[in-house]
Length: 333
Image (tube, rainbow, N blue to C red):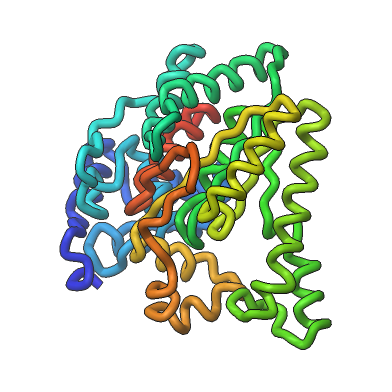
């Protein structure tokens, strides 16, 4: 395992534990507590921690996220990977934050992964809007509705980022798979296909358009009630069409709703790791034919209209969101 990860430095994890004067047993207990708080499926004990620190077992994604929260550090500082270009690797202790200002700063840092992906958008303005919505939600104030589209390839981290934004704003999250998967599975079977198929012409031509229609109809119901909403779906075909995006923006404008499109980008290795980790049946073909799948997608794809980009290569954006979420929940070492 270590030979396959030349940037992995297990000794850094041990140094972090020793700097907090924690035993292996204590770390295992705290990791389990973090797992319960954040719904990570962790069964950590001293043997698990020892294997991670000695380099005999590379921590899977949920363990790496829990370690980052426990030690208030990012993955590069814990030796899991190299730092991304320009990635800040000094994270202040946000657990001590006890004022709205401190929490807002933690949130702003987590939102710092959002940058302009096209002309005509302003990342600072968007970040301010999200923070303002969080403040309004806690004060009971409201404003006009907003439609937030969060797209990206499978395993890119789009759903995690959508949930983070939902936690901050209180906006409902409409996840395409959650809304339509049971119906899609049954419909595929009824039409002679496989329930977990997401790669055939049958799915792409007959089923997929209906999935997105259901998603959009649910969104319009919310917007018509003046409720902002977050749509979580790949949006690969939709974001690729300038005409679709223009029609969507026009319809939202007619409903006096503002729009923000976010594309979550990620490296192939991390996407595969997360897809493999979640073990969803609908991803079986991707795992079995990874090279073919990777050759068929365009890693340079960007929405054909005003949009933002979140850089989640090596899970950096989601790790920052974890830190902010933990600050909000009052987690402590």
